Length: 440
Image (tube, rainbow, N blue to C red; front, side, top):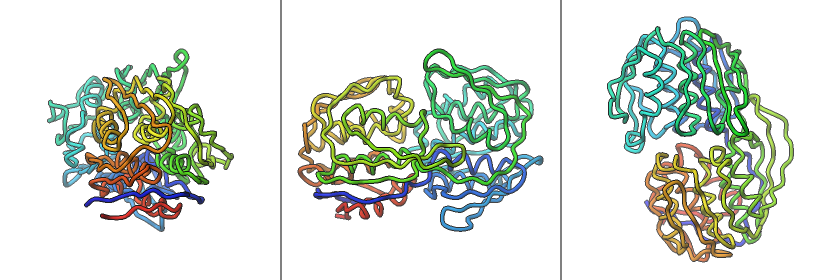
């Protein structure tokens, strides 16, 4: 069903950032693996995260909600993961499915994995390749796409792996397999990706080594055989979800938006760095920490932006924010160019193609490039008036709806159902700020 976002004069208010999706996945996985009972607050209750919780239950953990955003996880501890009685269906969740491939590969179980149509089209060989290198791992998916089985083993061998493409999911899957491998597993990244796995594993009592490789790279190491111990933790606010609210405040003719409790982590801050380069002048206030992550409140007010080339060094730290950056680029004066972002081709959709199509449908001059895109900004509100094909991609849907709040004419999307996978409160939060988004 079509939903439409209409231009409004002002977006104002304070919103608490939803729990970070990446940290929420990892909290349920690590809590389910640990010895003892872990308790989490502020967990994101989107469909993707809930499916990870269901998967951990199928593998022997106990996962239960104790209140809004509050969850208790009793881990499997020394007995380890058990054979699931049915397929693990991850829906649309690339993170949950890929991390789980690494986790289950070190146990003598046969795990059938599947997902929705979008997830079944996404490449998995980038995960399977290093897992196969760890010896003894077998799969029933030679084409590298779900559905397939992961046939685990207790005889994994540690490897040193250099991912050909920067990916926190690949790194995390290898490290999780390394927990049950013989020897020290090492992942070397030419450009550091988000480091939530390393940070949270340390919180659960695992020793994870990190050392710099040149100006931008990192070597992460983990000795096999280490065990996790249960913790209590608050989940920090998601900077990727908060980016939509921040962008709405920047684009609004009378914008005054405060997003509270956002995780501030250099491996996730690229979007905020780039919009400041474009002239947003975001305000930030320190708010303590949660689960080993620094927290800030971010203030976003109306701003005239200038198009900029996005520094390639920032690409890994903003890989999920390029759809909403494309919207900001449409309002900016001058050209914004994105390169080095070929990973966007294999997200929930081909996000390069989806971003360009979204912008063109609303009167913006944009072109695809093999590893990114270029946007000729309108120097103010773009024409709007288009119907955006979301392609089952939650970030395309939310980006288009934010565009509609400040464009010359309303912007519509063909589907919003997938927004629930990552940000179930998006529509209510936008309404609280004063947005006019409705069905039809």
